[in-house]
Length: 203
Image 1 (cartoon, rainbow, N blue to C red):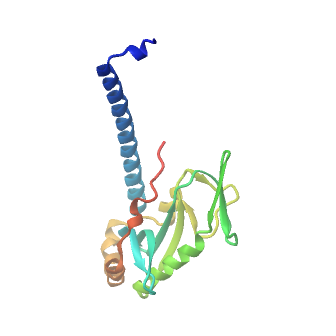
Image 2 (tube, helix red, strand yellow; image 1 turned 90 degrees about the vertical axis):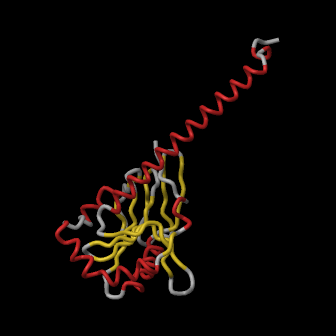
Image 3 (cartoon, rainbow, N blue to C red; image 1 turned 90 degrees about the horizontal axis):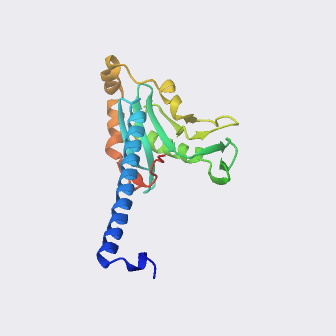
């Protein structure tokens, strides 16, 4: 009989416990890193805004609702952000029904997100009256667009250059100018169950 098979029961229990503890600590460390990465990403995006809504449902006017990753109040008005965290080369275009992601040997497609973005913009616009509303599909830095960015698509690193954070001196004027319309958007939005459905990848 082998040495392993001759181990006493108590030793087996200790081995199993050690493996379980090791697995649990590994899972906890990864959960913490993912939570920290998500928090940093949210802070980075909302940092361009005077006020913000994160992971909310906005009514579509027909009894349903649209999930919005971010709805930001900026000096330019409202910006609806559709966040995408994919790894690899992304090939997409305004007239393409599907966009393709190629990451080494892996390849997958997803529906062109522009149409859904337009729907979200329209839903927010219906709540905000005359306040300007625009939208962007924002990709994290794990993605690359070797053929160029489609319309309304933005890389995370370019977000602050396109939507510079408001200077402290103008924050109050932005809130005053857009206050009533923005409050209408906020009061109509509800928390979304999809808030944790798309975790941010970590190394």
